[in-house]
Image 1 (cartoon, rainbow, N blue to C red):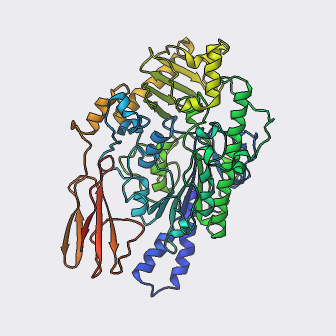
Image 2: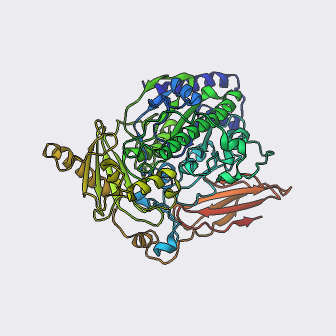
Image 3: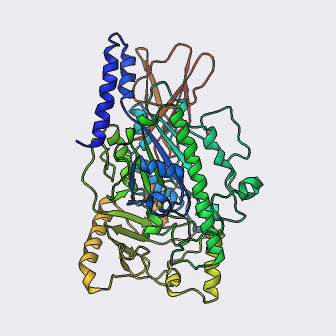
Length: 581
C-alpha cells in the first residue's frame, strides 16, 4: 500500500474514533470532521534556484532549515520547470497545463507589447480550467498565497481566500484544512544587482497573518531602500572558494556574484525557518505536507531563461507527516505540470481531465513519467522559438530559428555584474570556446546532450551516428507532445493573440452574472462558459468579508444583507461587481 494512502487512513481512523463520541453532532460538525481528515499542505517557493544546497550535494553555504527538512523528508533531484523563467512556469503550476498550449509562454504577456507591436493580453486556457487553488477551495480548503502571483493572467477573486503579504493559515476557520503558499524573493536574479543588499520585504514572513503589523517600504526591491545592516549582512565569508561553472569566467566579478547567490540562499533559508517555527508553534507540523521547490533553475547568465538543465532543474524537498520516508531520495522525473493533478490526488480527488500532467503522489498516482518537456519563446523584447524534451539521461533541443543566435540582449539580465563581465571579456576576445558557445551567431537545428556525462550541455551529439536512435526517439516524442497539446512553436505572437481572442480585436470580457431569487434562495449564473463566480455577503452592520466565496450552488441570503457577485473566466476581463439586496 502506498505510504501516502496509509497517512490518509491513519488520519481518518483517529478522527473516526473522535466522532463516535459526538453522536449528536450536527451535519455541519460532521462536515467539518470530514474536512479535518485531509492533510494541510504548505508550499515554500523560492525564485531562480538551482541545486545549490547541501541536501543536493552543494555544501558551499549552510542551510540548516532546508537540511533539517530534507533529513525528515524526501528529496527529489529531478524536478523540471516547463520554462527557464518564472511567469510561464507559474502558469503551468496554477493551471496544470503547458504554457505553450494556452498562450502563457511569452515572458511576459503584458510587457514590451508596444515595442513589438501587439496588444497586452493574457493566457486563455480552455473554459473548464480553474486555478488549482480554486479546486481546493471547492473541496473545503482554506487557500492562501503570500504573496507573488505572476501567472500570465489575472487570477479570479475565487482563486484564493487571501493573497497578500498577510496571507497565512492562521486566518482560517477552526479545524479547516489549508493550502498555504509562501513565496521567497531573496534568491531572485535581481538579488545579484549592485548595490547589493537584501530585499526589504524579507521581514514579512515573520509577521505574516498579523494584520496589525505595518511594513516600512513594503514591497521595496532595491538596495536604496534597505538599511546598512541589511546590505552588509553576511551568511558566508567573501573569501569562500566557489565551484564556478565552465560557461562562466573565473574572475573577481563572477566570484562576487557567486557569493551573493549563496548569501541570498542562506537568507532565504532563515525565512523558511521562520514559517516552519510558526507551523510548529501552532501544533500543525505532523498534520501538514511541506513542499519546498524553486520556480525554475539558477539566476546566473546561461541559466535563467534557457532550457538547458541549468535553467529548468530545481531542487524539491517534501516532508510528510510523522517523517514518513525520512532521509530518502526519489529519482523519478517530475514536471511542474504534475503539481496540479498531484494536489488533487493528495486530497483524494481525481485530476481534472484537461490537466496535461500526472499525479506522482496520492490516491491517483500513476506510473513514473518517461519524459519532461520545456519551451522558450519571447523574453522581454526578444523572441526565439525553442522546444526541449528530456528523458532520465538525454536532452533533445529543437531550434526553430537556427539562423538566430542563442544570446538575447535582455536589458534586465545585463544588470547582473557577471553578465557585464561576460560581455566585456567577449569584446576583448578573452572568452574561451566553452564560454563563447552562448554567443554563437547561429545555432544548430537540433541538439542532443548526454546529461549524465555532460551536465552543462556543452557537447552536441546530434550529428554522431551512434546517437541517431536516441535522437529519433526524442524527436518523435517531441512531435507527439506538440501535437497533443496544440503547440505551434514558431507562431507569430500577433497571430497567437488573434487565436486566443477568437479573431476579435479586443480582449474578451466575462459577462455580468445573472442573479435570480426563488423559494428563499439566490441563484447566480453567467453566460460566459466556464466563468468562475465569486460572492460576498455584506451583513446588516455593513461589514464586508475579507474573502470572496466560490459559488457552487444556490445561496440563502440573510434578511437585510447584501450580495456582491463577480464573474471571471481566466484570460478574460472580469465582469463588474453586481450587487443584490
